[in-house]
Length: 337
Ligand SMILES: CC(C)(COP(=O)([O-])OP(=O)([O-])OC[C@H]1O[C@@H](n2cnc3c(N)ncnc32)[C@H](O)[C@@H]1OP(=O)([O-])[O-])[C@@H](O)C(=O)NCCC(=O)NCCSC(=O)C[C@@](C)(O)CC(=O)[O-]
Image (cartoon, rainbow, N blue to C red; front, side):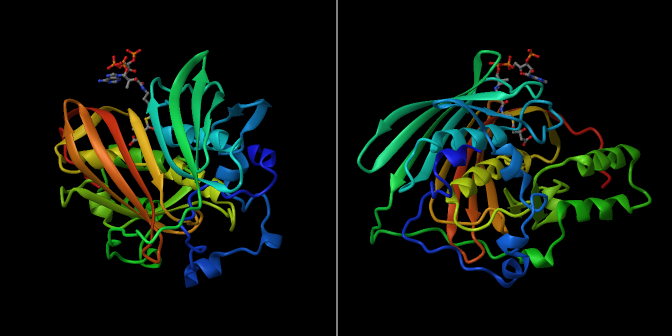
């Protein structure tokens, strides 16, 4: 794993003077002592997706785990792997604080991705890396990531975390799908679609806060709220990996938020054009975090979405923004879920 190049566990994400997130009772019970943690309990995001092979100085190769039905590489995977490659040449006392990417070509799931890193600048407080994700000799993603040393400040503020049910009181996507599948009058097409969803090996767990809304059965509001965490165990201490996992997670079901105000339309073609993230505080991506997504604008076959990842204790962990191409067509028959 690239991390070995960093000399073991590294903290390459922002620590704005914050201590490790306090554990909630659920997290305490779900915490597996390192000694009991076997390979199969470890998150596949760590053992596979974000485990890049080093080919040469500043040149890495990534493989794929889960590919969306569109059969183009999942944007979150490419961003997460690019951040792993970028961080590999950044010293331990610097933490990822932001990244900005453009998706310039569809990723091909049939071949690996090469990550070519340029050491753009090593300043006194900030270090910047540029990464090109390459397939068939051409870039599919261009990414700039910036790392900052700890520089605490009295100037601190944040929005307030939304008040929602706790994850223990909600159902996972899989549990919701099984509930829908138990309906005898479920349309055949819906049943097939739900079984396909169940077959997905998405390496993250999701608990929608408003399930009917999450599945766009009604245009309730412009926001999508769901609890999210990496499947499996990652453990304390390595903020670099947690930021890379958060980059992976942040692109899942994100662009779809722009469709929420338009229940009479569905995407005929959608793809992320760019993706930006800002890391504010330490967090654990293998523990439940609330993802609050909203769409301030859509038009011209594009949609803009913004997201905030919240720790359970109300601290804002990260912010995300993304614009995507959205080519839609009217929904002919309403979903019979
Ligand atoms: C954005 C483009 C496509 C612009 O590419 P372009 O050539 O400037 O513009 P274009 O409009 O001519 O698009 C060309 C391609 O888009 C597709 N396309 C176009 N219109 C339609 C349509 N109506 N129905 C079906 N497919 C359509 C189609 O594949 C076509 O390729 P062709 O088949 O002609 O060789 C290019 O720059 C690109 O592919 N960039 C990479 C985008 C990307 O892969 N992003 C990351 C993956 S998407 C993701 O992970 C998030 C998401 C969206 O999957 C999550 C979610 O679903 O919520």
